[in-house]
Length: 349
Ligand SMILES: NC(=O)c1ccc[n+]([C@@H]2O[C@H](COP(=O)([O-])OP(=O)(O)OC[C@H]3O[C@@H](n4cnc5c(N)ncnc54)[C@H](OP(=O)(O)O)[C@@H]3O)[C@@H](O)[C@H]2O)c1
Image (cartoon, rainbow, N blue to C red):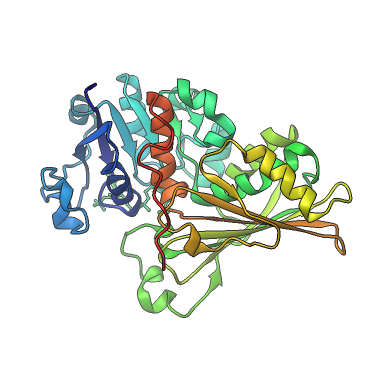
């Protein structure tokens, strides 16, 4: 049997990092050999996450790309944006496979990154080599990549919901509205009073209206699909649940088309996709059916009264929206079967 690929997780004490540890535990070709945390350095993984007893042999260490480089072949970077940039660039320079879960390498235009993230991009060379890690759009490029920019959680659900309609031409690229609702783990594990139990429980509120940083990422990819600049309205909401994102997307139809025909177009686009499920007519996705899975569920309905196509997508933000998609990308980069460690059914209830 071939030697296992050694993997390091930078930012392992966060929600995305912990989910990477959970998913990789089931991976027969990967062994986690290093994991980082600043605040919990020196503690073992199960001391921080008792739900991960299988990692008793891994002691969390501080982020130091130079010393980590010798410990692994592939690096999952689950760090805040800006912190990720120098570490990703250094590991990439050293010839490692790198999958960055932050936003630092997703926007191909450095100026757009700097405008929305209000920080300079100081590693344009690595940026130029990064492949946007949405396998449904970029599978062949990901297979050859050494640096993959794992998509944001909202963009994953939004792009997968819009792509077939724009690509097939049944919807126009103007007037797109993406209305998304995310569980609180999307904000990360850091202590912030806005995400405390009493603040979130029994409340429901939009945030970052007309200004969320995932907007240019969604627009970047839809512009590629449409072959012209696409501008959208995107409104995220904070849902009082732990995991999951529902996106309700409003598209303007370019022709008279009924729900069954639109569904058959979506099915054709995704027929070979292991992690996209187009639901039957009359079925609408829900969070509980994707919780813990790497799947994006899609349901839709044409509305002849308004000329709209209403598409609903559901993902688990920590799996298809982060760690699961990162492992899917690793599987493609390393030549493993794409669904290795990812065939988990949903947690129910
Ligand atoms: N949560 C999601 O649903 C989701 C989905 C897609 C993408 N992402 C992206 O994935 C990344 C991680 O997100 P998350 O939700 O897991 O965040 P998180 O829970 O806040 O975790 C952040 C991790 O980064 C470490 N860290 C923070 N500041 C650092 C620094 N200056 N130097 C080194 N390490 C540092 C933290 O370590 P300590 O605090 O232990 O020191 C922790 O391990 C972010 O870029 C996020 O945008 C998140």
